[in-house]
Amino acid sequence: MDIFWHILWSNVLPLTLMIAVGFTMQRLFSLDIKTLSKLNFYVFSPAVIFNLLYTTDISASLIGQVLLFVALFMTLQAVAVESVVRLRGLEGGMRGAMRNSVLFYNSANYGIPLNQLAFSANPYTLSIQIIVMVTQSLLPNTYGIYSVNSHKMSFRSTLRTILSQPIIYVIPIAFLLHGFQVQLPQSIETPITYLSDAFIGTALVTLGVQLGNMKWELNPVLIKNVLLANGLRLIAGPALAALVVWVLGFFFTIDHLMAAALIVSSSVPTSLSSVLLAVEFDNEPEFASQAVFLSTLISIITVAVVIFLLHI
Image (cartoon, rainbow, N blue to C red; front, side):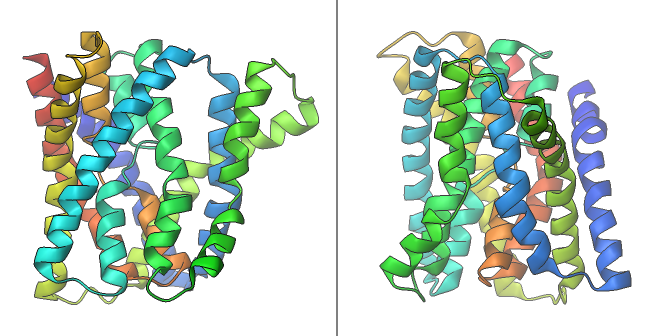
């Protein structure tokens, strides 16, 4: 029960309050959500990724192990969501929106604080979470963009859009600068830090603005799709992660901390990036917003259960 209340008060409540700020601002002033979306995509998100990679020491062997887990886990998740997409007969933009709501999860502003809480600020488990977060930052800016645009744009146009995303270039640059121990000038490092600190707040406010912009009609089909996406993300997600960890244990040693950190990292709710993609490319924004909002609320229970089971 202590874990439950910690998650509620330390993670979910602060997130909900910031979402409420965006919701209220939208109702009062009708903000331009496209501008907010572009700020998140092209400024704040690249800054936080660069800052974390540049300032964190992560071994090559750990990166390799975590990336192998991520590849297998994402493959199983993709198979699961694709099965639902086909069984539901989803078409057009809803196919991509459903995939994004399951495959992209909140590994940054939910996953990192959760990791710190669940593992008592252990540097080893934090490094694991950062690697997961990097992959979850890269995927929406590559596959995610393709997913929401493939039904309405040519492959060449979609590729051009993907190559315009700063995050693709930020990740290798940050790794190289950190690897060669290049010291950034204070005039560059300081603004990057400021922009990085602004990421969580602006992303959550953007979600609130989108929620405030919605009509909130009780559409049974939409609600069913949202609940299916939440089930795949919050229940099937950690279950598949546990399966992958168990299988990998036959090929190389996975210590208890790594196994637990990987499973917890997979249990978090749908990522804000799915909303940002939906808004930026006008692809089922109502579904995406409801999937993020509802999964965040439901995760109060599901994440607590996952951590409880790991403790047992």
